[in-house]
Image (cartoon, rainbow over all chains, first blue to last red; front, side):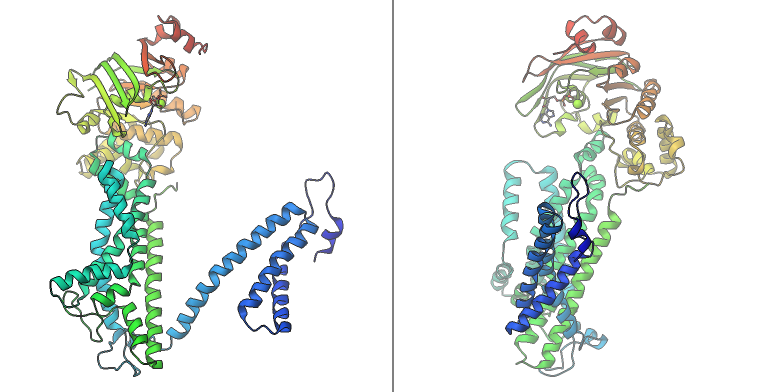
Length: 354
Length: 258
Ligand SMILES: Nc1ncnc2c1ncn2[C@@H]1O[C@H](COP(=O)(O)OP(=O)(O)O)[C@@H](O)[C@H]1O
Ligand SMILES: [Mg+2]
């Protein structure tokens, strides 16, 4: 390590104590990893998790020891906190990155234009070929309809709660929204299924949309509520004091100010329901053929397709490849939604520039 | 044009808390009336009862009468929205609408009340910005966001926004307390010009400001801790600052207070 700093130590009476050089944390990390690998090899441990844990431990301890000797106790604690944050960050990122990586690696095998534009209509689940066109159509229609129902109701509920809600009714609405947030998706599916059975209906796409809308609504209400609460009261008062009625104030001042955040919330809610499998399995059932009509007959959807390729193909590698490719498509869809949400939030953010 | 305000026996509550009690005064048209008094004595509360903004606060309640040229603002069937079109307000902290350009901020009140013709809007916006002494500073960037202006400019933008809807009365709640001395001076000059057209009521913590801009001054005070605020006296500004009829007023103005 940096010998000069170690030797000089602290200057008495100076405001500047000895500092580790900038590259020290990286060097300690590199040494820790090397040691972790070495110890694992020597002890005959083969698991990657073991050497990583040893390395992480060495890193934290090493950082403290070295920093305490060179810079003093307080700085050493500071550095330990920093390195703990880094370790936690890596612990969170590693599974995520490896999930994305394995999905991409396995997904790209069969993901091509053909795959995106063909259905499974004439392909047996254990055979190669086929695609996810029917599942994409199903997903888009079911999610689209669910959003058309769930988003407006959710936003209006939030407006009621923040702008008008007082007393018992508002309290009970808040309570039910809280309860709805915790509803497991399969229960929402069963609820719609019970209605379908009462009316003697066969599975169809819109039934799935209804269950998805139930799952989406509380998320939209919550996020919209938070966004509306962020709008300063002074803006509402400024508008009311101009003689603008309350409903117009909400429409022209409150909503435009918070529209970026509200859209982000809706997009995230959409992303959440895009991966729902259970209610779709119950209510939409799955269908290898293309069915463009969400109001009649079974449909497919991406999560359902993934599940069925895995569960109904008796371990065929072709089906596995298709499942991974469909997963990749689903992740890409969710990612695009997230990016779009960020874009809209930035574009619509209140402007302050000169 | 400007109108007279006649308040009698006005009491205002926040829930069960009585904030001001039994206030009566007359505010003449085309005058500037300053409200002075220690913090928490109910100046803002009283000001907000004059255009029915008080009831916007949850739990806000008012008893008593406020006559605007003989019409009781709190009479049965009076629409608070119409009251606020007659009696505009400028707040302590400049609060331009952050999503709107300078032009749209000034046009907001008109647009939100249904005026949409571009040429008419342009005329009113220019007139209002000129009225607020802001036109020359912003005429080249009317389409830029209002939030990008300096604090003093923003406050004049808010004044332009308020006068664009042609109110009869303009209420200002410490309009300069967030501003630097130069911007304050600009707004004081502006108040002098605006009183030709509007009845102006201004709350201020700055005695010199009250002395400089107002024709009449009202002194408010608390009867004691936890008691509602009351009007101590209202008189010509000159008299209040030279020879007030109540000792408490003199103590407050000369800084011998409490
Ligand atoms: N939003 C509110 N809710 C409850 N009480 C309030 C509210 N605003 C003001 N008050 C109370 O009303 C009294 C008068 O306040 P205010 O009118 O703001 O005084 P000033 O403007 O003279 O400083 C104070 O006792 C204050 O605590
Ligand atoms: Mg005040």
